[in-house]
Length: 246
Length: 266
Image 1: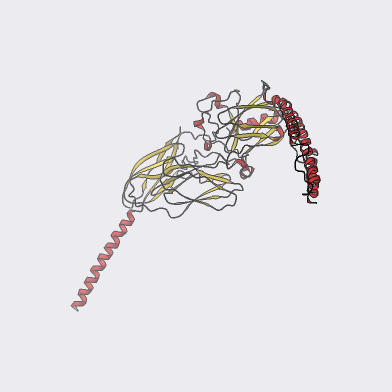
Image 2: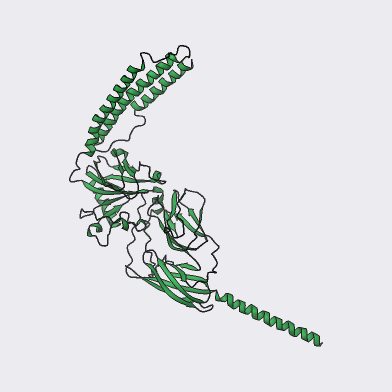
């Protein structure tokens, strides 16, 4: 009877230790669930976005018979939120961040790029699709000597997707189509979590461990802004940016 | 026997070719410019002289093949010796080249050596891989200065004009399509932002290269309204086949409306 009680005590002690270990490991993983959310606003007058004349290629012009497409240098939502801002961690990463496994998609539709600004990890796959009834050429132009290599690939109507990977962080690589010179996209290549603001200006970064980080927001027209953010274990943090219109 | 069949084929091909040229089976589209008739006439004369020599040359070839096609009676040397034949060819080809140069330079000079009408509508044309853009000076009649470092195609600043600071550039109208009023003298200044291109409107009988670093003027007057294609006829890169724009020749009223609409889109 004594022996049974001894075994029971040992088993329950082991169970307590195991539960404790499980709990502590759970708090460790909860620490990497830190989240940054926020809103990006534009202060000042929104610059006029010129309509795009696509008459050069009738198959492009036909897709915009209603309102003409416009330039997308500054896209502001109805509530003043600034879209297409890439938010990423520029300092404070441990270096063990995982690479997003899903490929990121860029579409050529109506002779424009969707999305106009996209962010992705170093080593993540980029899939470029042509939905148009015309040929495009995809021509990213990373900074010379920066580690990423420029390329220029033609994609005819109905051609298979073009796949690409970037080797070095770079914010941001401009992409153009020489056949349709008005087409412009930006690819921000970063390490660690990233977010891109939508038309209401909001963005979200997930999967951050507790710690202090430098958060950088980049916009194609208004440049960069940084803020220092401290994340306590498992607690979401809110960070807002305001860009001043020139 | 083979020689005789070959001679007959040479004569047939020659006649068929001559027919296609004489009957204008594949010919240029209708001319819509003031200077065009001179170019068309010159082209007709060139085709006539070159065509006569072509037919004569083919007939002589056919005759020689017909007469000496068999291996047995083939002469060891050209009858009469080569000296006179070479002299004859030299004189006739030389005379033809000289005649074409002197007569042709008149048509060419009428386009290039005549000053443009001082009341011409001046349009600035920029070629780049692989599109054309056009610039109208706006109400002030003056073009803004060009700053190549300001070129930003994503922002629709194809020319690199400084609309924020340059008063001349503020009212410049940049378009992707060229429109002109009918019967109005037009002066184009062509410049390229990258490589060699060309400005070709077949109906206008205008074909002029863009040369990077040069501003090349060209002038013409269109005599008919319509919509025509401007194409690049100088191989300029992988998108060359797709480098084009459209020219609309409009009545003065339609042109004014069009320009107003374009100005509103700036």
